[in-house]
Length: 427
Ligand code: PMP
Image 1: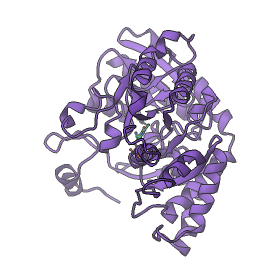
Image 2: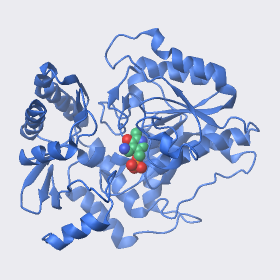
Image 3: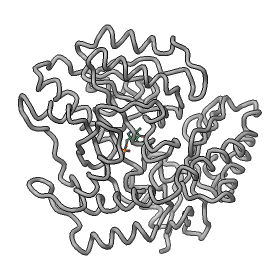
Image 4: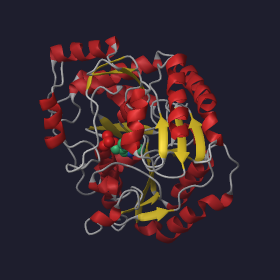
């Protein structure tokens, strides 16, 4: 395929990209193929992928096993409605998710994207209390610096500042925000870290349906890694005050932090869990909201006795088939060793940045490496430099970060960390 100048002009004039302007669009790079850990640009240049297409493509691109699973599924059925119908791909995926996720998670709601799974989780929590005759429990408690998606419900629990709540202030529901945890992952625990959260849940539990947060890693809200003790305390407080706990494992699920699910670092489990991104190995959009039997039976009792959500493409067979194949591929691989090796290599490779005067912090957890600068970077300029160095890294704000595919080799990973150190040193 060749991208003519006309195609590029059409893209610039007519296609929205994530978080961009139609008046002053940032440059986009035409990718014509992707294989293994490489993206192929139209000019033939190959870039080592440091982003896993936003946490999703953990096995690299164009995997024969995943291609085969899709071909097999397409030969029997690409899609069929889920209302009044079921099919083998959904059942097999559901079984696998129930088996893998921490007990007592037992039921699965399949939906279209991470944001939608968060909407579903919020609706489930509110419906749970409504069915018990406690409709006043309809607000949420979360922590600052979080990110849960771009739809309205999800946006209402994103960090109010980076989530730009003021633009939508008239329409967004208002929830409670505790201070973000300050105790970093691996640092000593300080009891005062939980105080702001404890105060809010103590004062408002009568109207709080659920706490929602990302376990251990706060992703798009700042790439912060916090202490498992914080999460333990949150679980205890939720139990004490009769508040449900929703854990958004959309970015962290399936091994990224070194555990299959990040909540395992704290040895706790949620009442409702959201999965997405990595779920299909980066092949198709699919997410899932999982709950305990207590939550699913609570919702299904009382009024209206049904869960009020049902997307057109719910349980899409192609997405379910590739998700199952992706999970099998992960579990059949030495993923723990791979993540440990990536973690070690990221620590070594990014360490030179720590001594640079304009770098505020360098942190690594599992297969996530972050360099935080003292001021926001010029994204277009920095992106261009990374492309010139043969790697795909997309910074945002003050953060230059990488979460490579789990299958990346030592040499390619070195190429990524070297490029990050060089580009950061130029800033
Ligand atoms: N929750 C978290 C933790 C995420 O990182 C994201 C995506 N960055 C979402 C929710 C939203 O997922 P999606 O973009 O698929 O709607």
